[in-house]
Image: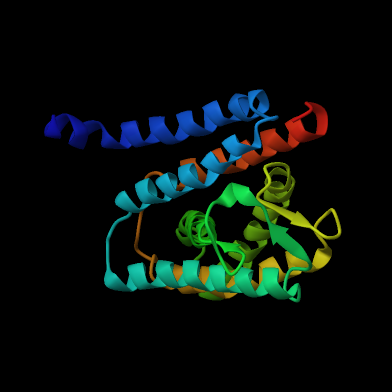
Length: 219
């Protein structure tokens, strides 16, 4: 059994992740009137991050400190933002992201870790200069958020006082993501993960398709 898992663990991981995203698309449409089901989203995201980190190589304590710092910094900014409205604009979290501390879901630690990790890993092999990496990564993070926002609002993850996200939100995402991508990029310069590109593509396709369903499919 062990040799089977060692041989096919990457295929099993990809099957689980791709299958999870694939099932979620029709599943969310079918269960669109049962918002309690939306809470499974943060559980699946946490599982996906755990699987990604299992396949990360090489391990180092500096990498672990860096990715943990990304998550804690992201959560801290979110906590300040949701309690003051001065960073992203006025917004509040709904129930879909699970338990909260200071009105901010603990799951936001995971959300920042997985988004910054995926984008940094995909770009790092192509962009050597750390400042260019930070700029490109922050720009991609904004695109990621543009796709995420309508889905997050529909799934009761958060809501805006202005109904739609203000421009301030995207500017803040760029400014905050820039140093976080640079920080993680410093410690994954020679790292690799066979799942990172595929998972990022899965996420972007997932959000893109759900956006179409929200706009045209009565999600």
